[in-house]
Image (cartoon, rainbow, N blue to C red):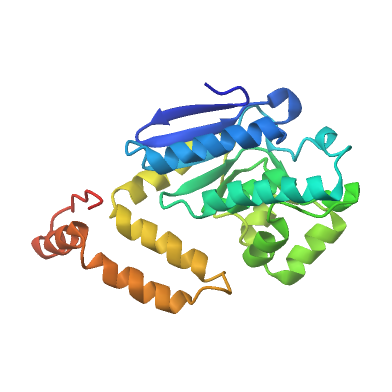
Length: 258
C-alpha cells in the first residue's frame, strides 16, 4: 500500500515506520503524504487504539527533510510546504488516540519536529536530536520553533536552534524533550508497554486529557474552560459509570469508549 513507510498492526497498536533507510529516512513529499494517510487510519479505524512512529534501519529515526526538494522553491512554494507540514503534524498532536515517537537514531530537522508533534517521546541510547536548519540558511518550518520552545524552554530552544548543535538522548531526557531512554533493542517494547497501560484506561477520558493538555499551550483557547467542559462531558459516558462501579466493587474496569 505504501512506498516510503510501512505499517504493522499488533496488539491494537499501529506501528508506522518511515522506510527510507538508504536516505536516513529523510522526509520527502511522498513520505509526508503517506504519513498523513497512516495517521488518518489511526483516527478512523476502531481496531487501532494507539500508534508508534519510528524509523527503519540502524542509524536514523528521521535525519531531516529531503533538502534536494528545496532547491527550486519560491517563497510562496516554501510557505505551502510549511503549511502542509504544520497540518500533518497538528493532526498527530490533536489525535484523540495516543501517538508515541520511538526515536531509534538521528532525529534532526523535520525528524525532530515530527517526534515533538507526537504526544511524547521514547529514545534509544544512540538517539540524537537537533534542529540544524540554520546551517542551510533556513529555520525550522514544521512547528519546531514553537514545540521545542514549549518542551525545553526558550533559552535552551534558542541555543539549540541557533547553534544547530545535536544533543544526546541522555541530554534530551534531562531537558524534558524525551520521557524515557532505553537500549535500542528495548525501544519498541517500552513504547508498547506504556501504550498497553493506556489502553486499559477509558478511551474518551484519554482523548479529553490530550485535548486539554494541547489547550494549555494554545493562547487562543481557554484551557480551564475547556477542562470544565471535557470533565462534565465524562458524566454522560458509560465509561464513567463502569469506572466508578469498578472502583467501588474493587475490580478491574472494562471500558468500551462509550
